[in-house]
Structures are given as structure tokens and as C-alpha cells.
Length: 326
Image (tube, rainbow, N blue to C red; front, side):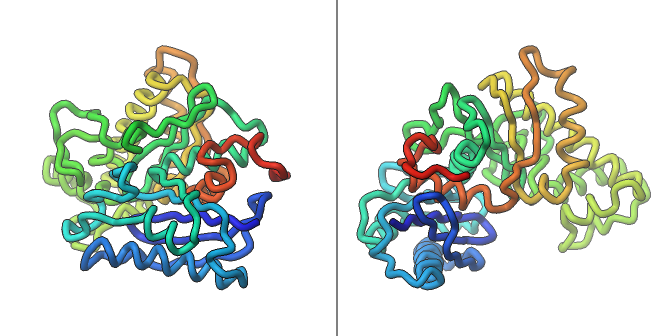
């Protein structure tokens, strides 16, 4: 039997086809359209599903189930993304479940927030299949997928785990992409680190090699200058403070045994992102401090989680699969 996993991100959309042991047999990837509307994004999703099936040399109707890990927020009942924060305002509504179900000719299509797909993938592929864990992404946005007592938390509308929109700064120094002030994502996501750096520099304009006024100034510039530029180091220290505060809040809320971290910002800069969090947590956490580690699944964690969702009915529990992975 064949299964499909889809990862719809703000930058890229990818799909894989796998077998009953979660072995990837074929894949396809393309850039996420920035418009003109949500239907263009839907068409891109259908395009990569067709491409992955073609790469596997099967017809889409041979697929028995699919999982989708997507940017949010979701309207789970309607099977759509509604008003995504990191795409243009013209992309208001992205239909997913209906069109994918129609393409594959199956009602077994499981839609999740991308980080929930991530924790499903982490559970499925972990040696111990942990019942209590968090998958945290620090990328263009920040979010978490949470499993408690073996139950993956999705919320009634599919939007549980939007921890990037926790308020970490009551003074609201930064405005998040969602339009609200003081959110964790407003300080520490890849999209917002350069904006935060500009605000810090405006407040204290010390000498720096960073191109803070350049429209193309990015988080990559900040991390590349680390260790050689005093201001870049200051920005990274401030980001580490907010990250540690956010992770501590997540730990207090869910008491995980493991916090697995992914997303481009963390994957490309683990010593600047994850190591400082580990160092700070013992002074910030009241309960047991969990293991905090970089995901072993790299940038495939969401798409592999979506595939695992298709195999396990949305749980990541390997006991539901006849032939679990080695």
C-alpha cells in the first residue's frame, strides 16, 4: 500500500510517497506561491502530490491515506488554512483536505498544524516512541507539537501548539507577524530576528558591520557575524533570552521528557540557538528539566511526520503499523 505525506510551509511545499514501513519511495518539492490567492497554494500542493506519485511511478488513486502538515491557523472542520500569518494578505483561505481527498480518491486525509506533524514524526521515528515530548520549530515562525501521555494534542480546531504567539514580553517591544505585540515569534523567528536587530540598533546605535538598513538584511547575516561583531553577539544573546523563556513556558505547561528542536534557524545554528537555551533552563524551570536536542530528522521532520500520520491515523503510534520502521 502507498501513503502520502505533505509539508506545506511558508517557503516551500513538498510531498513524499511512502510504503507501509514509512520508507520514502518518491518525492517532489516546489516553492510556495505568494498568491494571487489561496487556490494557487492549493494547486501547488496538488502539483507536488502528483509529482511525488509520478516519481514513484504510481497513479494518485493507488494511495490509501495522506497526512498534511501545514502552516496555520487551521479550520480543521473545513479542512483549510485560514488567514496564514506568513503569507500575503491576499492568501486568505487555502483548501487542502477536500482537494487532496478528491485527487487521491480517499477519505483518509489527516490535516495537522506543521509542528503537530513534526511531533508525530518524532514519536514515530524515535527509538523509544516517547509518550511525553515536544517538537519545537524555530524557523520563519515558531510553534510546537505536543504529545502528553501518548496523546498528540491538536485542539478542537487544530491550532494547539501555537506557542510562538505566547506573550513573552508584556512591554510589547516587538510586533509579531500576526499583528499582536510581545509574542515570542516577534523576537526569535527567522523572519523577525532582522527586524528585532534593527529596533535594538535604533535604541543603541553602536558600531556594527551588519547591514541593518539594507532591505535584504536577514537572520543569516546576524548568525554569520557571530563572534566577530559585538552587536551581532548582543542580538543573539537577546534572542537566546527570549528563546529560553519560551521553552521554559512550554516545559511548565506540558512537562515533556524531551524537547526536540527543528526549523531552519535552529538547524543551521544549533550552537547559537539550542546551546544557550540548555544553559539557561536550570535557572528558569521549576519542574524537571527535559532533554533539549536537535531533531534527527532535519528539515524532513514535518513531511516524514505527515507520512507517519497517514500510516497511523494521525497519532504517530508505531503499534498501529503492521511493519514498523527499523
